[in-house]
Length: 103
Image (cartoon, rainbow, N blue to C red):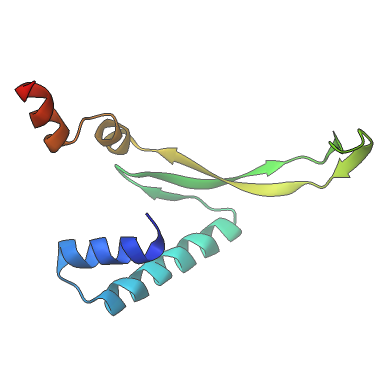
C-alpha cells in the first residue's frame, strides 16, 4: 500500500475528505519525525513504538574489490510492534476464514 492508497482507505473508512486525511497524515509524519530527531520515542499503545538507536562507526568491506572502508556512526529508526498489532497480523482475515470453513 502506498501513501495515496492509504489516504483513500482512511478517507473511505472514516468519511473524512481526502485532503483532510492527507493533511493529518503529513502532520503525523512530521510530528513523529521531529520527535525521533530529538531522540525521544513515540509509543502508540496497541500499535507499536518508534524509537532511535545509535549505530557505532565500524570498518566494512567494499564488495567490489574487498578493500576495507570506514562506515560512519549513524542513528537508525526502530519500530517494535505492539501486542494488538501482532495479534491482528497473526489472525486470519474474516473472508479467508469463511472460505477455509467451506472447504
